[in-house]
Every structure is written in structure tokens, then in C-alpha cells.
View 1 (cartoon, rainbow, N blue to C red):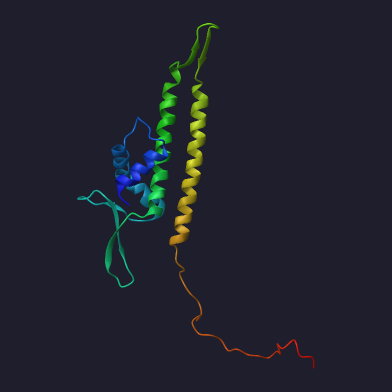
View 2: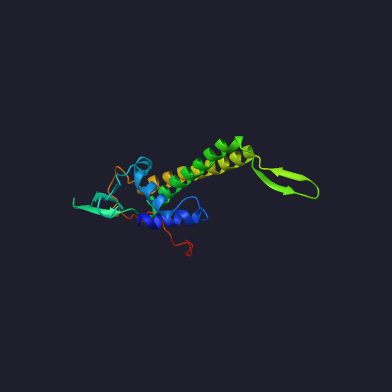
Length: 174
């Protein structure tokens, strides 16, 4: 997958916020590839010419090949960015707690409604915590799918002796 495609998916998943662009998300993804490597025990790097995320792996014959980031790795990277996004939102709301934000003003009945910043910050924190739990589940699922057995004991390729000690003909009465 291309970094710009991942960034565009993130932008759509966050309902296209006006305060951040796809280019800024793509920059963050490239700058924080180390977080993906730490989560998944991989070695992705940013290609200096194409600015795409890729990894050099060895195949069964020992040849090195360069592969771009896959969909599973991209989903972990997307979750990492979404957690970062909600963290920024929480910080901005905590900083803005001192400011009074008026949500609604009525003239006839003289009613003024203010935004409760603590409630907003608490809701954002709950969403961030849920995203973090989902990130952990994605990491665990990725690690399970990429793990291979260390040892295969026994020889499962040859069929064992087929002994027919017991009479399996149940229709015949002796």
C-alpha cells in the first residue's frame, strides 16, 4: 500500500476533519514508522527516493526482496495514528478548559448554554482508550498470524500401519 492511500483512508475514517490534511497525516506516518516496527517486531523503513514504506525480507532460498507495507501492517499504523489524533484532541480540550465556550444563546427566554469541557475531554479519553484496546488486539492478531512453529516433532509425512484387529462388519451376526 502507498503511504498516501493509508493517509487518505485515515482522513476518511476520521470524517475528513478540516484541521488536518492528508499530506500532514502522510508525513506523520513516515516519521513514526518506528512505532509500527516496535509493535510488530518488523523492520520497515522509508525509501529515500519514493518515500514509501518498505521492508527487506529473505525468502526461503535466502534471496533478499523488498516488499511494501501490507494491509495488516497498514491497519496497525492507522490505529496508531488515530490514537495520536485523539490524544491531540484531548490536549487541545484540556488547554481550552479555561476559555468559556458558548454553545447556544436564546434571546426571548434569556437562556445561555455552555459546553462542559470536562465531559468532552472524558468522552475523547474513552474513545482513545477504546482505540488503544483495538490496537492491542490488532497487534496480537498480527503476531499470531506471523508466528511459525519452532519445531515439528515426529514424521507426519508417512502413514502408520493400518491394523485391522477388530471386525468392523456390524451387519453380520455370528
